[in-house]
Length: 372
Image (cartoon, rainbow, N blue to C red; front, side, top):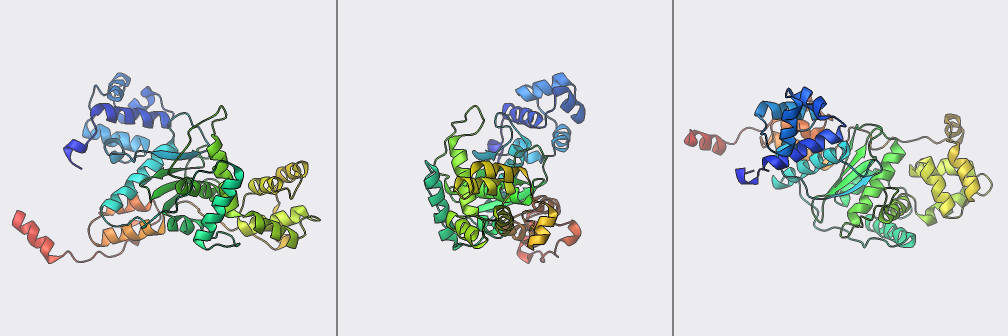
C-alpha cells in the first residue's frame, strides 16, 4: 500500500467511531482503554487529532481488530447481514470486513484464485421463482435429491469462502461481502446451533448467486422482501419440495407427522423451526398442527428411539479449506510471517502446528546482499 492509498485522518476517525459504536462503548470507556481522555477521543473521531502508533496499537487491542482495519481499504459493499440490528454498525460488520480484506490480500498475492465464472441468477420476485432458483443451483452442483452435506465445501465451489467464528450469542446470525463479481466471503455466528448455521450459509449463498441486483427496501420490521425471498431460496436449497414430499410419504408423515419430521430434519440437517415452517408452507401439515409441532422441540429420547442423531457442521472456529492451504503455502514460501499466518488461520492451528519453511532461494539472498 502506498502513502497515497492511505485514508486521511477524518476517515480513520470515522472508523474509530464505527468500531466504538459496534462494541457499544461510550467515548469515555474507549478513551480509558487506549489511554487518552474523552475529549482527545472525540477529536480523533472527528479527524482533528492524529493517532500515535502506540495509541493505534492500543485501539486495535481494545476493539480486537487488526491495525490494518483502521488504515486499510475496505471491501466496498456489505451485501447482507442476516438478522440482528440492521440500523447501526455491529461486530459482525467489522469481522466480515476483516475477513474480506484477508481474502482480497491473498488474491493480490496470488495465493488463491477466483473461480473462472459465477452462477448468476436474477433476484427472485416471488416464492416460486426462489424455489426455481434453488433447483438451478442444486442442478449446477449435481446434488439432485440428496442433502447438501458439507455445506462449506458446496459454498466454496460456488465462490463463497465461508468462515464460522465465535461471536456474541446476540449478534447477527451471519453476513456476506461480495469481493468481486465471482467471489464472496460469508461469516457465520459460531455460537448458533449447527442447523441454524447451515440455514444462514444457505441464505448467504443466495446473496452470492443473486449478487447482480439487491433491494434495500427495509421495512419497519427491519427486513426486506428480498431477504424473505432469499430465505425461501435457502430452505429449498437445503430441502427441495419434491424431496420433502417423497420422504414424507415414505416415512408415513400423514399418520406420524412428528416422527417423520424428526427423521427428515436429521437427514437434511434443518432446524426444527425451519422444517416445521417448510411443512406448513408446502401444505403437508396444517398451520395449527405445525405451530404445535414447532413449539415442542424434539427430545433426546425421540432421536434415540428413531435411530437418528444430529451431525454438527460449520462449528467454530472454521476457516475455508482453500484459505488454510493458501496461508500455509504463503508461510512455507516466506511470503507470510508467523503472526500473519496465525491471524489468517483464526485459531484453527497454533504456531507449533505450522510446517517447516522452504529454504530461502539463493537469488533472494543475493538480492538482499546487493541492496545492503
